Length: 309
Image (cartoon, rainbow, N blue to C red; front, top):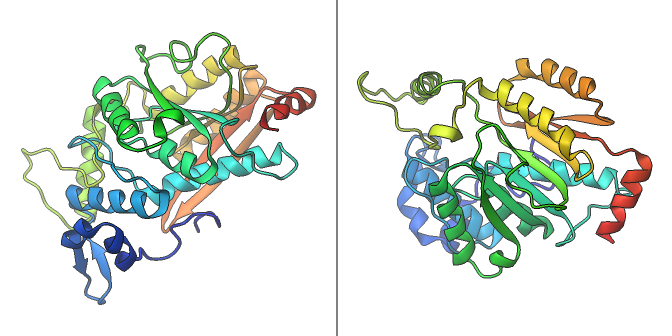
């Protein structure tokens, strides 16, 4: 089940979405059961749905991404943010801190800017997005500039090193309440392509063997894979987080592969994280989780909370 505060419970209300975004109507199909839906194997339809969801539920008037870039399913992305809000509330006498006093880093923000858009709309948080891909950052910045008020709430910065997450992005003395990340899942381009082929077969679609599959949710390069895959990516993030132990309240990252979780928890214990949280999430049959950790003890947490008042 989705988080109770998630706006996307149940089936999509296509009548409402089309009222706000008439262009979506051309992408809507009627299923054999007589329900409205879209062809989730069609990238342009998925993009049209995301554009409509962002407008209706989050007030984003202008949103687009370059072809072949990741167009993520919005309900799952929203869940991560709502559970992170709960995490902050646990450190704040049960009250979710809201407004620009809360600052969040999205590691690998991508071309779509989804986490900052949802997090700012829901909680008024300030966002910093980092990415190694200049074209993705240009797309994210275009979205920021195209929508009133976003330039005061978020910015994006280039990460020039494949091996760093906070170094090269945070300015001297800059502190964060949260960091979040959706790591590259695969360990190689071949592994990413093979996974895409399996997804297409699952959707009942066939493609010629000589042709790489078109991804319904898109994604390419650093969005989908890195050397060592998710396991090594998160390992490096954990190791670097030690150097920023007093500049980030809660670090967090999605862990897509459940088999990676034991090693992640082992490494967090080894580096001396004061508190570690594993939060399970589910959207239909799809299950995921994120791990969050902090190096701040009780007194340091109490002092930090004064920033939110």
